[in-house]
Image (cartoon, one colour):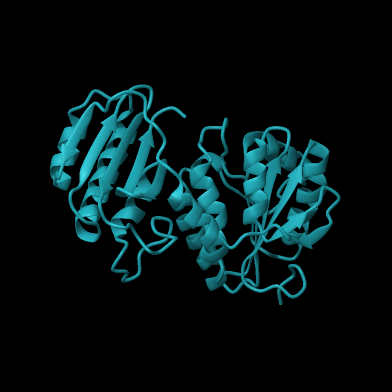
Length: 312
């Protein structure tokens, strides 16, 4: 029998918005201690400051699975994939419930917010079949107000700083949130692109990107090259010609791939593997695994995948 909130089944996704370290500990520490005491696998993936606070509040040998937030939240799609693998392994061993405490990146802390907004919306469906009680943590002192507004829209349950739990009347259907992201306009890039390719093959696009002088380390460049190849292939297989690639170089490298098709009909495209869909390929999912920041945009001119790499 589950030990989570009464009457829940599947994934229980809640958030605490806290404005002090004491408020964080008052909610998170009991949540973790109760999970361990109940014999539930308890996973924690927090930033350095909050992880240190929680470690000091728990006894040694606390039974918690501590994850590096930087590694776990490398990209939204890779975080979904690795969590699903962990949950499936736990459920396969016969446990009734898994507890998770997490904190995703946000603006000013090594990431843009758009991808993580998609993550917070998508996990409501991506984890729906797993018996997981998830508590997300956001510090109101350091999180921008627009991000906090999005956080409320993507969590079905709220936890007050005093530990009070309640359904969230401001929760918005995840597919509506994801559709809003698709309609968002492409950001304006600085200056003219360093490279434009019309109707390239995946191999042509790969070689052209490798020939540019970019400020990326070897691993980042290799990931971006492979992601570009996957997206160009996806455009040819599932989109409509012409296909155009544009690259901007500078402090960051930005790559866009545009075709004149409507883009995927699946709102979860890129975040979850395609399952026999005629409108979304595996290439988008692969690109999301590789690229730290990938966004999808549908506009009057067609469908664009935008990928960035380099310093945030």
